[in-house]
Amino acid sequence: MIYKKYQDLELSALGMGAMRLPVMDGDDAKIDEKAAAEMIAYAMEKGINYYDTAWGYHNGNSEIVMGKILNQYPRESYYLATKFPGYDLSNMDKVQEIFEKQLEKCKVTYFDFYLFHNVCEMNINAYLDEKYGIFEYLMKQKENGRIRHLGFSAHGSYEVMKRFLEAYGEHMEFCQIQLNYLDWSFQDAKAKVELLKEYHIPVWVMEPLRGGKLAKLSQEDTSKLKALRPDENTPAWAFRFLQTIPEVTMVLSGMSNFEQLKDNINTFEEDKPLDEKEMEALLSIADGMLNGRVPCTACHYCVSHCPQGLDIPNLLELYNEHVFTGGGFIAPMALMAVPEEKHPSACIGCRSCEAVCPQQIKISEIMADFSNKLNA
Ligand code: SF4
Ligand code: SF4
Image (cartoon, rainbow, N blue to C red; front, side, top):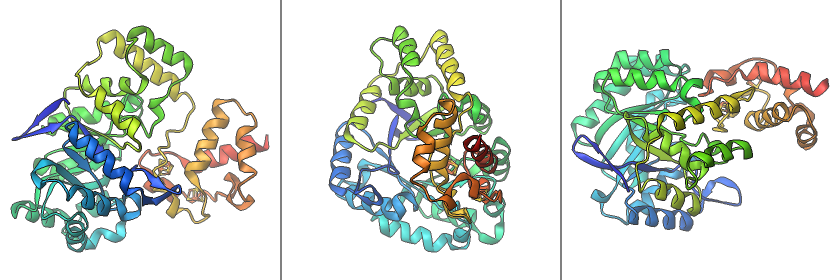
């Protein structure tokens, strides 16, 4: 395992995200604890010392299960990160209650890393609003040792991140952003890395494989990469890309089975940054992939905000399929299993979903376009 120096710590360059743990019966809330414990035992054995959970992952159960499992290891043998759930505005006035509950859920007396979760357009005003006292409370926890390192995760635009940094940047010790070779230009990730550099804030990476999308490429793209590095598998390319960016300290991957975990650990046995030619090839593949596709990561943040109860990520996936294959039968066939009142045509264009979408997808416009395409 490669380790990165961070202040006085040695962090494994690969961290384990606890948002996609193995589950039972396809139910996201029912974590398969035995399988998760086995994965963590293996991760520990192979040198992963960073574990990242959050209040909302697995319907609130990720913190509980991670707490239960990690509690079997000496507290100083792992670093635990969790986050304040400001992606839901109704939590804003509950920072103390939530923080205390998180310590209890995770069975710890302090968090090594604690983040403002998902700073974005929807919550930036509330995060900066002193009346909620979130920053003040978290700084106090840092003073009394219950938070060792304070940072934030950001899904919003460059401008939102800048506002947050102007207010709290000097106190932020790390920042978690969505960084991968698709988002390098698409989500402005390159500019965000530069901005963090100005504040001397190291980068933590989330979605290195963009929700698994970079784990498998088309036959053509796979061959292009194989010609450059015959022994590297496709997901490893996404990690090698990140190893090329000096500002990156931590790469978090939400691994949901043993095979992914083993593969990723193997990749992180070595530091093998890309050379110029390889970087060029990868970014050109990214350009091709982005052509016309909607970058939904199926995070589901939008779903509870839709007054029509549409399964937005599912519809966007079908839209991508439809656009990518230039029509075809798969999307119309899949929609036959969806009630009429949940079709893209049921969208009333209210844009509530767009206010919370970390990927800034213009969902209402896509629903209208999808509806037109299906009726064409
Ligand atoms: S714009 Fe459409 S998809 Fe989005 S919340 Fe409104 S009705 Fe739902
Ligand atoms: S549309 Fe946006 S908020 Fe909804 S699931 Fe996709 S990425 Fe998440």
